[in-house]
Image (cartoon, rainbow, N blue to C red; front, top):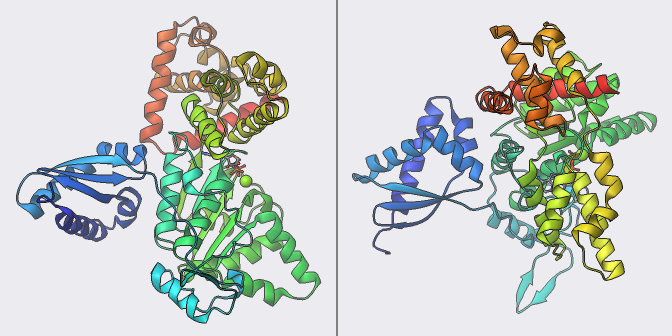
Length: 487
Ligand code: ADP
Ligand code: MG
């Protein structure tokens, strides 16, 4: 087997592809999708790994696999097949340097992104004045905790599905190429869908692998600190702190609505950091267009890089999240109990976690096994409140009809003109997502159509979402309107 080592050919093919993308002004695309590593080779076949099944699908869909195989053919002079495996990103254990000072106060050695990890740790060993562990004559190097990042929030603890894979991949690209891949990265999503987790995973990955001054702060605390700096006449200290960041992560920027002074301050900070190619990441619970009282210049800056969405996880992803969270706590639950929870809690990941905590506490406190019956009883209130809050199909029809300037009668009626068909399909899709109604029940609310028509409509919209990146955010906006209308 070892006679067929294609790794050099792969490296060369990869380098050439990168050059071609760069020449075609598509380097970002390359950074996003060509997150590929060489694994092994046998005659005629090279095995490569990607960080998620989603990336593999996209490579296939975008014909990049063919492109890679063609390039390998070109380099090698003979045809070669690729075999892609999924290898989730492993974040290295963080033990490689010791530094007593919190990283925010010791920046002299670590401001460059380019610094390789080894040099980085050596530099720190040399200057280190802190405590030293001796163990077998080698230093055990303990990296201090980051002051504001939660170590729990890492990429390997983030479960991916269709609802978040694009955001996840973009976040990985950013943490591999801070300041270069996407700047800024804006992560959108409703409460409890993993915005903070993903943002901090970027921070943790850069902190552990690259280093630099990484600041994570909520927009609320940023605002408070800013006001405090005015009150204590320490504005320049405040400015210096944020303008010397290599990576600035600001969580929940919707909080900045109506806060004009803070917006201006953040705008200046943004300009300074962006101009110096420092990485910026923001999260927000709604699309920028729905933020009120935000200066135009700041709005445009937030959306200048890449915007990604976190959506509701589907049933399978919810099961996977529950399994992962159980593993992390060294707990197990019967499959039917996991499925029961995943089926009943569709609101967000935070609620899923809360239910799991309840069940685990119940097992620990009572020493009893969790069964479908006991868990059903234990979680009955959560299950009931999570039942999609009685949104009616009529509300959905009315909101969608209004958005498209057609009548309620038409959207549920028989007419098949183009301007009515799309909103109707969209309303059916949203009805399936937001209510517990079956496709048969939905069909009967749309002029007595049968369930296959409804399913067909839903598939149409799903396809359209894949090809039109503006559709999903638009649908999220409609859903918010529907929720508000219902209140
Ligand atoms: P948000 O900031 O969007 O409100 P969080 O990032 O605080 O949401 O997520 C809420 C909880 O759900 C956190 O404990 C987080 O770890 C967990 N969570 C969210 N999405 C995922 C995911 N895809 N995989 C694993 N855990 C997740
Ligand atoms: Mg959050």
